[in-house]
Length: 453
View 1 (spheres, rainbow, N blue to C red):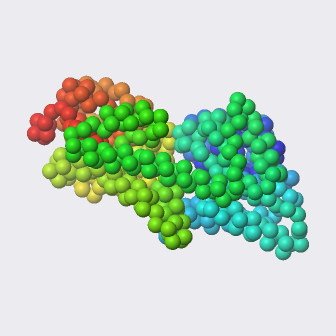
View 2 (view 1 turned 135 degrees about the vertical axis):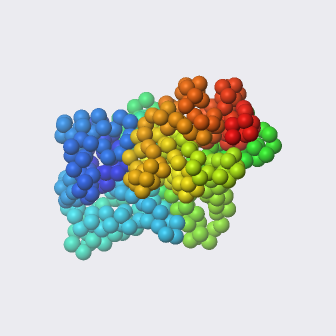
View 3 (view 1 turned 90 degrees about the vertical axis):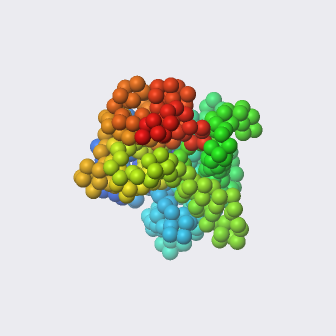
């Protein structure tokens, strides 16, 4: 098929590359000149495993191309995917200005019938607004051909987006007509040869499904974080509780890990947007408000623990941070718990030695003044980060942090104190190595505070 993907951000670029992988001819429209130049050179402007080789292969084959001209992108096209950003507006709602601007441009540019698909995460009713906008402008041009609009929300996890797209656990098609549904089924057929995982529903239901999925996963995380807070007061290890409830098939093992809060471009934004949608309908979203409040509180736990350990005196202390991205497998810093901790440490006068495999460049830009003054030191080596440190804080559970040489680390640190923000370490083993260990919702283990002070 001939496809156009509007927007070469995270979702748009993965979508374009993966459809090209299956032999489709894809033109991706990107208006940012810097990003466009990089993409045409075969450079991926985001960190996503497996994406760059795919991009280069299909650029070379001609299956994939990039342009800043919408008319070029939609020439003889069969399906147009809208994959532009929907950031949070001031009132918490999803900012649809980019989506609606694309709809207006399509109405002024299209010269033949096609299917327009919302790939962006959008509130219920957006497809109807997109369809109206396109049709009004086509009518103003004296064109009466049909442009159908459908919803096809993405369910991609940063760090495994290519795998998620190529082997989806479900494909949600929001279509109000049989022709659109059949066209999208044919497009996705190569991805679903082993098992048909298509879930067809109405457009509005598909739009809501995306929000409900992210809100539910955020709720599971926040529930476990709340249980961890209670466990800490009752002398119970949340890891034992996690294993106990995760064995129940009705609950499952995914998204029930206590930690220092969730971040990223999806969960925080989508929970806020769903809250705002409820408010506009006069419905009180009590659970969603609690999820958002719990996550905001959770992001402060590590700085609270550090202040408690050092009796509120953080000035001049050297704190090592392992992990800056909001999750492993990405360089995305949006809503990352590490930023809350960094802001507080730098404001308190602490010196920070941080490392992350891919996110240091973004942090260096954000904290340029602290880097220039030497208060913040960034690198990729976990051992360099802990040298002379008074405490080590694990924030993002990258694989290279899972089994380090703790004997070496203890020798490098000034004080053997470990704050495990993701509960990835065995507290008893860490304590046996001479560390004071503190996790999230876990009993403290190892040497006493006085012994490591």
